[in-house]
Image (cartoon, rainbow, N blue to C red; front, side):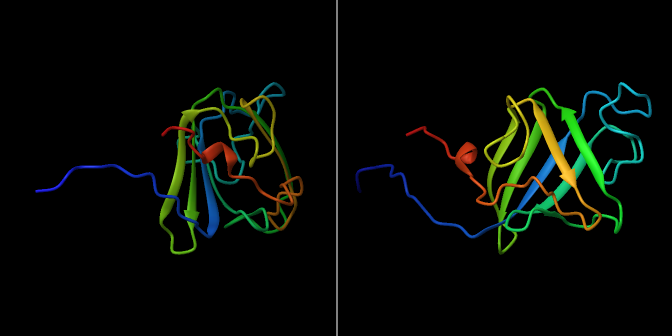
Length: 139
């Protein structure tokens, strides 16, 4: 018989990808809409935007060649943001909370603002990505 104990163990990961799954507030083809209905990564139901990003390069995987876009969407604490390591294992997630703007370009934790070139590279992606928003302060 032993004494039960809990320990907080810190582990280092080689973060490779970020998966963003958000429901933009205004999807449509009008002037007031945040995301047009032909935006790459928008699901068939035109309700969710899914993107897998190489965190080192800021490149969106599977982006259609030659399709440069600007993205400025408000997501209002409804997105899921998941980090994956080099082996494809989920390392940390933020679910139904603020946009992690220490990693994803945007403002106020409610907006995602991306400039995407024709190669699918986010040109305003941080040069030194921070995973601070994914680290819990809970003991």
